[in-house]
Image (tube, each protein chain N blue to C red):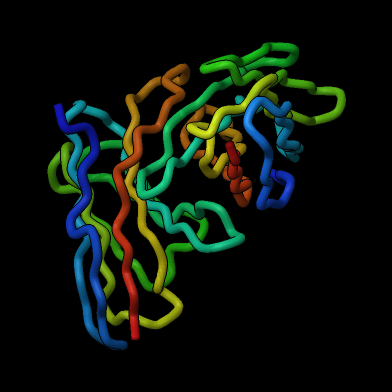
Length: 112
Length: 114
């Protein structure tokens, strides 16, 4: 079956540091890949997506590239801000995009 | 446009009690989902629905029942609550279609079973 493995947290960085959160996946077929973000006390929001190999998703300064050869979808941001503090979830969709499979989440804290 | 709303926000139950969580969406979405979120386990799908009157089991359906009598509402029931059902429950919805990717999430319901 499908599965998503992402780096365990928590991750603590200083403001303006470079961020990488690793995500690898196992799937049959050709899934779409996603990063969702959960701010404190809220539900999840879609941050970015990529629907085929070599696609790059980007939003709010975050980027992730769909690497089929390494089955990875690592999240990066060049300069993090305090407002980026949240829990980040990597996810993939099954064929037909009916269901999502989530990773365990990575808690990110940015200190001024 | 409220998006996805969940009722209640918090609840404490005793073992063996029953309750229903209500999810409502005003976006005319076909698909609706119930997840539970537990520390270190991410979100796990409990049940989902691909349209009014339909339901299907997800990854962890045992101990839960659902109903989708109206398109805009998706109810999650616990008939006899157990401490293992202590969790945060999220509802989500999305449009139908192969290329409708985004799921829209509600704010969550925190349930404690003692």
